[in-house]
Amino acid sequence: MNVVEIENVTKTFGRFTAVNALSLAVPKGSIYGFIGPNGSGKTTTLRMIMRIYHPDPGPGRIRVLGETKQTAADDRVGYLPEERGLYKKMKVRDILRFYAELKGCRDFKDRVNSWLERMGLSEWADKKVEALSKGMAQKVQFISAVIADPELVILDEPFTGLDPVNADVLRDAVLELRKNGSTVIFSTHDMAVAERMCDLIFMIYKGEKVLDGTLESIQDRYGTDTLRVKVEGNGFDARTIPGVEKVTDFGKLQELRISPQTDTQDVLAELMKCGRVTHFELTTPSLHDIFVRIARPEPQDVVPGAARETAHA
Image (cartoon, rainbow, N blue to C red; front, top):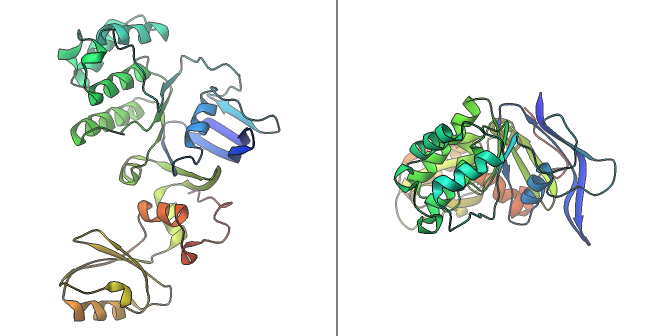
């Protein structure tokens, strides 16, 4: 069963096409990641799923939790918007109680206390929102989105601005939601988070779907064309090695993209001339690399028909 189904949906703002002929399906119980450059159509798509925006008239349709109704309010859906907004003069406990009652919860007291404890906010329960740090306020907003145990949770950039500790707390909460039966859709610019957390990954670029599937199926499209290497030596330039098309330098580690006809042993031999090779691994490209290939393509990065193909598992 799919919790969200979008079929051939387009959304324009004046002459600007934010989303063009988009189709996707979000399976029940999955964590579904939205990625894409700024302005690519991620938030517009999420807002259409929320029915805050309506698609352009036409054959396209959006079904959420089996329904195609047009009203935005739905107690079965929790939403954390990109633009955070809390009532700053309200106390933390009161604002969570407000959102719980708004969603029809009657046992909100225990829910509020449980979430405050889980997110490390119990000591701040009776403080006004304006006294919270940015990270704390973000956790409060997250709780407000999930306090009613929604069937579908939509999170727009939930990890932005969080330190590693709070990011881990929020990640664990998202995984717990999935474990308890919720379906989670979230957008992110952190490719490592998408790789580790998402069952399925969807990428939109210039309003069109360019990737959709498991990480493995997406990587398989690009083949095994990446060498991760570590060389103890100074002053060498891997770009001068025959067959190396691009070098991404991460400091201690480098990723070399090689042409299809290149013999990896030849590359290894050249690297050994430069210094002691302590790491040499042939692998598929990372999601970060694939993202960059699409969003900032060089001639060799263009995959034929990439803007129209998908990579379903």
